[in-house]
Amino acid sequence: MTEISPPKGRGALARREARLAWGLLLPTITIVALVVIIPLLAIFWISVKPVKLGDLRPAETRLRVSLRDRGDVPQLEYRVTNPSRTAELYGAGFTDTLPEGVTLTGELPQGCALSGQTMTCDFGTLAPGYNERFRIDAQIAGDPKAAEQAVRDGAPVVRGAADNVLTNSTFTLENFRKLFDSGEFWSVFGVTVFYTVFGTLGALVVGLFAAMLLNKSFKGQGILRGLYLFPYVAPVIAVAFTWITLFDPFSGSANALLVQMGVSQGAINFFGQKPLALIMVTLFEVWRYFPLSFLFILARMQSIDTDMYEAADMDGASPFQKFWYLSLPQLLGILSVLFLLRFIWTFNKFDDIFLLTGGNAGTRTLTVNVYEQAFAVSNIGAGAAVAVVVFGCLLIFSAFFFRMISREEGL
Image (cartoon, rainbow, N blue to C red; front, side, top):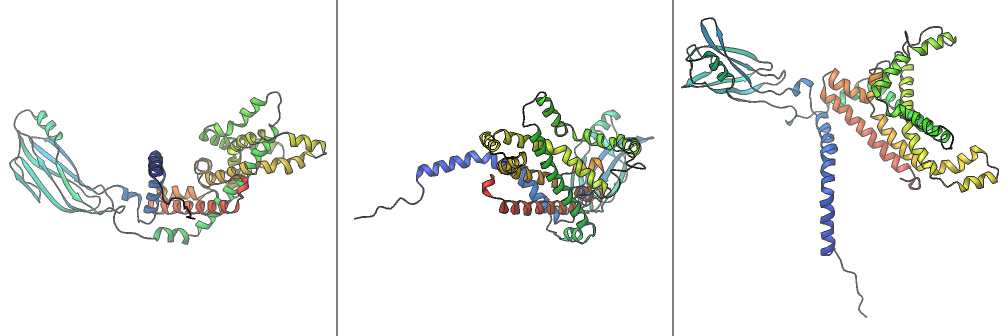
């Protein structure tokens, strides 16, 4: 009896469906590549380049031409510049065609030659920051204003080439070496971990507590839910400056209240001294982002079947036992997802800390360090190196999280 084996490979219909699926996915893949992958690759590229903020100003031949009437003799003025402060410009020069009615009568600059109405100049190598003006006596036939306008409207052809630090083949690990050799990196990393872990856990715990309070029907429930959402939907700059004003050591209401109650003998600089500033920005993180956890947890709690709670009441279970043995196992999935998302978002958080303390008083995190390295110190490469470290930390955390978390918890 002949054994019949199933056909191998894919048929024409399967291949056509695969092509259709890839065609439908192509716009999504393209958008993800443009929005996520390409900027990420650019950060990795810059992190191994010795790039300063001034290097972003390209080395190029810039030419400005004007016709000025200086006394009795008009002068044609050429201003040649190299805007880069670090890169030399090789083979610099330009070719300019003079308008009709403008004739040069003065001595031409060195390296320039005139052929009819076309002037060609070759300057060779221009040093970084080169800025020079050349004035040549001229003669104008006709309306001077029209001649001046014609000179301004001209389109000289400029030449010049330079080595671009962003695109050349020079690579270095100096940015990472300086980053890890500096004594402040590990303190900044510790601050980031403290802020992220306690900010994330605090937001989850407060959100869980708020969801348990509002999981019952009572008068004014909708209004209270709306008030709970206020910290999350309010503009961050508004709530940040509200906290700064409230806890101001000289005019803040919090300090005045503490002094009147006898809790404090004098004003406390909440956002200006260690380690209180770090605790305050962490509390701000908890207060501002617990509504997100509250919404997700409340939605999950309202989808839990109430029959098992009724059975637990009949068995004499206490409220804590119902929460621990009935509610919490049902919430582990959403709590895991929220912990992952909030950890990643908090680890990347920049604006809250920058608005509250500017990264001072022991509150500098890795993201604040990215900004300071790139713009305060003008070291774009070092800032990109810190960003790569942030990406690596989140990648390791995500891999560890998905490895440790149970599939039964919804992940």
